[in-house]
Image 1 (cartoon, rainbow, N blue to C red):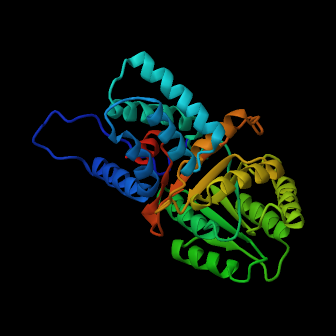
Image 2: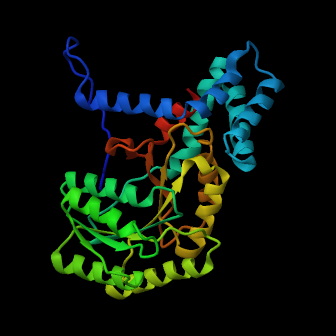
Length: 333
């Protein structure tokens, strides 16, 4: 299993005078920044627990807060049902205790989305990346390339976004910055670029081939058909590929993000998501809606849908592995 960005907290040291390790500091820093990024979502939910009693009014306010956070009605009802059962079983009497239990419930709801890449089974591992324009797809690919390279994996990029004029140039900048090879064509066919990239990745012994596809709305049927064509052509170059089909979604779009996930999944059979632009969002609850839908969705090629990474800014370190417990804590802080 490939644990890109995974932050491991070491066992407690036997020397109490020693301060926290670098990995502990990094984890604490990330959690603090995540909480700050989700503050607009978290403050509306946390504000529900300022009273002194647990009553119907509290649950009604919480329902409104979750809906305002774009958790959606099905996920909101599921969370409230589980929360009420847990409150009753625990004998909690204070709203502050309910807040703690809500964090536990949300963690359990989000946990099925948590997962790691497995890059060891295939060489190269072919990763096809899709998303609508403006979601941060190409920038995210650049960040992933850097992290993969830093982790010792050789990467080949494919500039298969031939519809947007600046897309190839943007990816070329990332390729140069990360010192990796890139396959591109002037006004080339996206499927042909993808085929050449997979073939080159195999010939050059690369660990990963990252394919940047054109941004499009799921309602643009001719462009969605182009994505399907890219997928078919990739399979001609490597029958088991693509090994991952990722969708980059903008966390600020709320329930529209869920609609995008459903549409792209129907067309391509998604294996993973990358949620970007969560900094400053008031709609962080959409991950609960996605989690509930993903549990009801049939696994594609034996793979359940995962949220591999989340992004909270423009810097390289602002893209990190999704951790359900951390996200739930930040969402309720």
